[in-house]
Image 1 (tube, one colour):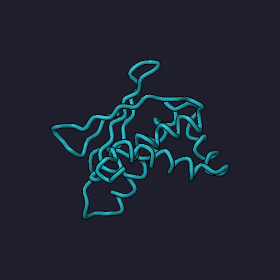
Image 2 (tube, one colour; image 1 turned 135 degrees about the vertical axis):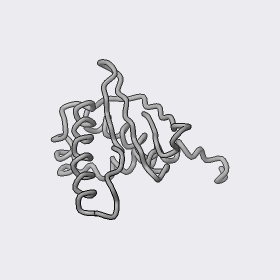
Image 3 (tube, rainbow, N blue to C red; image 1 turned 45 degrees about the vertical axis):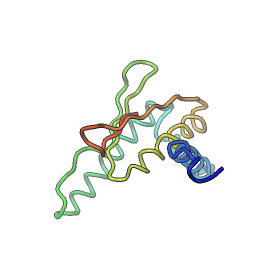
Image 4 (tube, rainbow, N blue to C red; image 1 turned 90 degrees about the horizontal axis):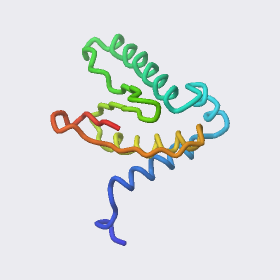
Length: 128
């Protein structure tokens, strides 16, 4: 198999899964589980943590005005979530697919199906 035969999305999916499974040691797993009792709570809490960190970052840096939210999670119904993610680095958006799969499996013993679309209007915006 040559480099041309590697599917970029699959590569980043697997890399994201490996990243989470490697860092999820006992201590880190306990810390992650404190963010919520299920995947929806985990993502909603992570959304809030991101907002706080982003606010602190922006308030400490007068040269960069507050940017739009980059991580927003909303429940559509009991079994579907929408996650909106904005990043200047598309590779991170692709890594997130695998990372979310691994978080669901390792922390909540749940297999999830994740689809990702990239906005045609704003290439920095991704929806899962």
